[in-house]
Length: 169
Image 1 (cartoon, rainbow, N blue to C red):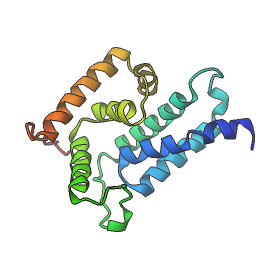
Image 2 (image 1 turned 90 degrees about the horizontal axis):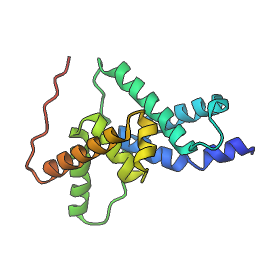
Image 3 (image 1 turned 30 degrees about the horizontal axis):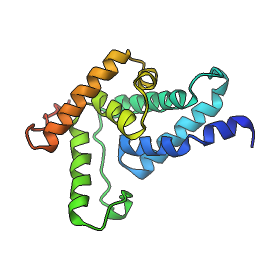
């Protein structure tokens, strides 16, 4: 294994976790990670040594996902009915499982811009500057979207905000 492979491989678990939080399906998440890794290895010569490799990989994944969303916006996504496909670790209590389901549903109600930032900061523990690089937005935009996203998520989870209805074209 060469140095390039080792450098990229150490980020695969975080890429998989972020992909799962973006698309909520194991198969689609694996495809997203695969596409990200393929593009990263094929264009590794574009990465600047000394810069943040994780941010570069997450930027690639973000761009691939955004392109997929744009390409598929005309056709609605189909949900699998296979219960075995859910791979969310839960405690042995029903209440915790319901909380996880409610959190997933609440995250799905957020605008994509807010959800991405919440996941990168909260789940991936990225700094605001890293998130700004990944999403190619100013740090102030990251901070304001994070604040609005947290407030919106809190309102949804508390039952104070009704999810916005989205117009389908």
